[in-house]
Image 1 (cartoon, rainbow, N blue to C red):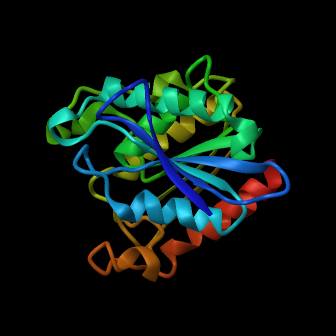
Image 2 (image 1 turned 90 degrees about the horizontal axis):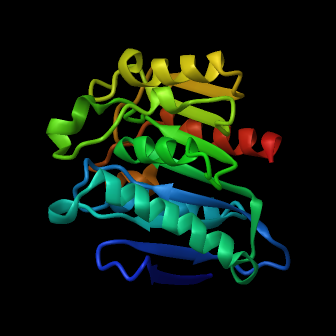
Image 3 (image 1 turned 180 degrees about the vertical axis):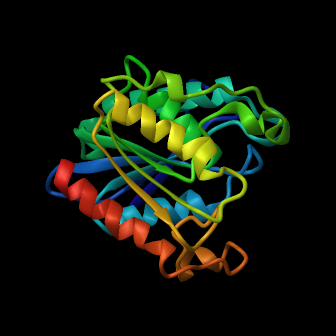
Length: 237
């Protein structure tokens, strides 16, 4: 595997980590948007998620958007858009099939992923949202000004896989996932929803691989979201 980092638009606060698998054919691609309330991006839902997808024959990418003292929702959105532009422009050398290129976002990263997926010129062919923020209810806590991504949903929104936990108190199902899913249904967008009875917010893959860098937070049942997502991807791509 070839791992490299490229800067985005000569930015000192945004970059794209590339996890390129050797391949004789172009592979599906997935762009990972970590959560973390705009604090320094954590390994649990960035690098480790990308590497896990890579083991399943995906070209994986992680967007390093502005956080901490540089945090900005608008700049983060710009970084994601620039990342997709870079990937599609270099698709041949990256061995990625742009017709099978999508996005996955966790928590605050889920809000960013949904915002990008719903843009008119989005290059994402699918979106996966993990316990996403969908409304600006956490802006004060995160120290950024975001937006409600629910009204952005349209008939052009890509196919969506969304998951969370009923015990999640940070992004409760009724406040964040349910309104987004209702918008998907109302607009005739194909989606798959899993709301697990176990687990919580910030679980990432919820297995040993991520729990060792996530305060031993693992949950065997909640971790089923990943194989379910792979199965869904196999059906839609």
